[in-house]
Length: 174
Image (cartoon, rainbow, N blue to C red; front, top):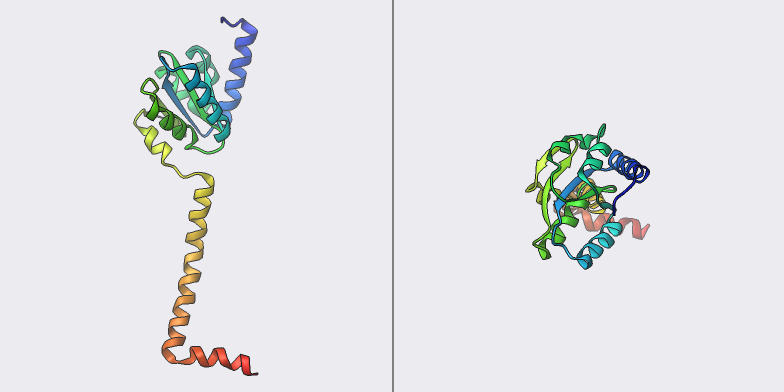
């Protein structure tokens, strides 16, 4: 269905708004993908904070002008599906990688992160980035490790000197 000028302007404005806030962009060839597969991918995209859209390349190139994704303008050829990660950088990469496993028609074409245009192979790198919860858990482990190591050292020194049991009994008797 062809869009009139006002509809195109709305699409460009929507994409520009998303591109201004997005962390990463993955563009993939989707020709041959079934309606059921696209519906499942769109559902999963909504759940994981990915803005997924099939749009003409000329509209996308206008929308990304002035954003960090402007570097992709010259690489936009052929029918492409655009996945913008809005919540965490690796979400679009994980989505495309997951659906490309079961659908050989879905092929990543380009990746853009922090103003850099990367080849399609970088989808795996992008997909391997930890989620926000995983990153916070890793940080908590790193922050807690020195305190637990200190506690183990203090206990080992106390046990070695034989004061560990005596010190524990003394407050109990008092």
